[in-house]
Length: 68
Image 1 (cartoon, rainbow, N blue to C red):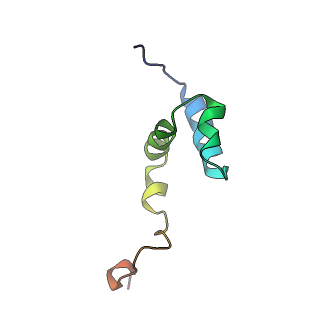
Image 2: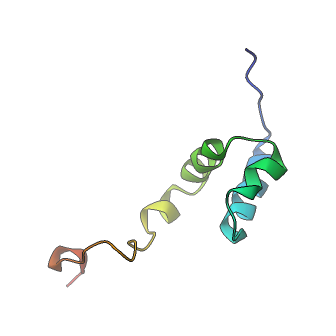
């Protein structure tokens, strides 16, 4: 099986669309890529933003979470 290579511009545009997209399930179909690949690109292109993402609503908040 031959791996398809995507240009950096395509990956950047895809990640930007992913940030603004309200339905992530549809975007990979539109772009013709696997959903997991979008998340991989996002993690590589915006590593700081991914680390600074807010905690999910259901996650417990502890004292260690806050910067005192």
